[in-house]
Length: 460
Image (cartoon, rainbow, N blue to C red; front, side, top):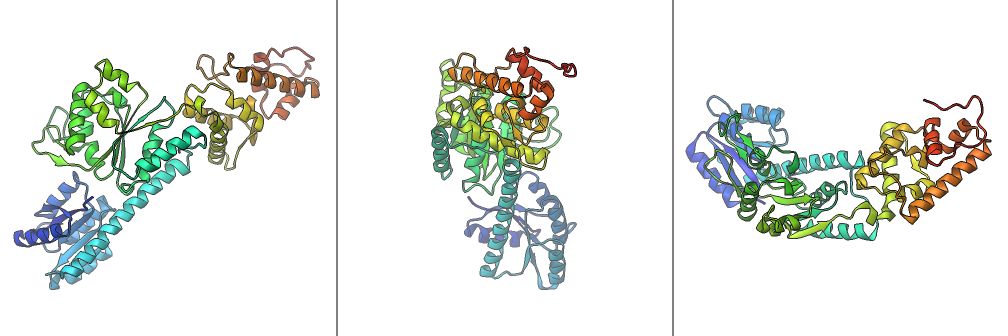
């Protein structure tokens, strides 16, 4: 991918000669004849470096440095100055300019300065991306976890496809972690220092999706008060993740297909086409092939997206990972809400492994978070997990494992209650839960029989 340089100079001869020199070094050039024009172009273009003359009317190179530093702190500025302007260039470095070169610049020195500035820009962007990834994943537990055979196959595919620019279609049920796959591919690719832009197609107004994807010019339609960059422009050089791709209209599908084939976009209301270098990863929880057969999704777009298919297995196909996932989430939310780790007991692992988890990993994550918040125990027990009726998040009564775990849970409750002579407060303390949770379990397992003390009345 070529690095993009914004060249600002009011002298037509200087700007042309510098442009030709930079192009010979394989840089992509955007030119501006004034500082203000340069700042306008920064609003709509992805730039790795700004090179500006120092002495210009209205807005000097020093002013350009101030504005770029304030508005786009990750973009370095190199000043080109005459001998008499060196003091201004030095002052500009004190307020944020990356470096300066003296006219006429020595080609070797100039190339070295520019290369260092571009490398600095890319490293800052990569560092920002990795920090964002750490904050999303490392801090909050939002990452792909698993060691089952099914997940090992997924990880192997991710590692292989990350080294390419092939289009990827990620399929799987809701809550399996499709966006996490896109993030893993992006941050393992050569595009890691460039943006990862995510767009949920299902949440967009159908009439505005093309504006979101391709951008629009000022006045292109009612309400278009300013020029807007689309997601393809924002993701230039990086990755665009199109979640729930099945939700876009047939008309938008045709335009998306053209962009994937030609690598060019045109803003709504615009007259020119722009080249974009974007790797597309799409996802869906629907049967996209079935939608093709029913005429609701374009066959040519389907095959264009299906270059590399990755299927994420539902949680019921990776039961071996449930305990590991639960332990991870318990640790994450324990540190977040209590500033200390929370564990998952062996009995809890067995209990959680017997649940249906129709909402997959996302449902498990929310269940563990709720248990950590509501329980006072440092080791979560089965009774700490409460589910609402009708959500599909209860133990499968038809499954042998579910019946076995229900039986074991009931036996354990009876054992503890007998040990405490049915003193429910003491039983709740041993079980690591509050009395409200214990009463719910007693009702579920029909254990209201036994000796009940006068001071042990049900809590409303």
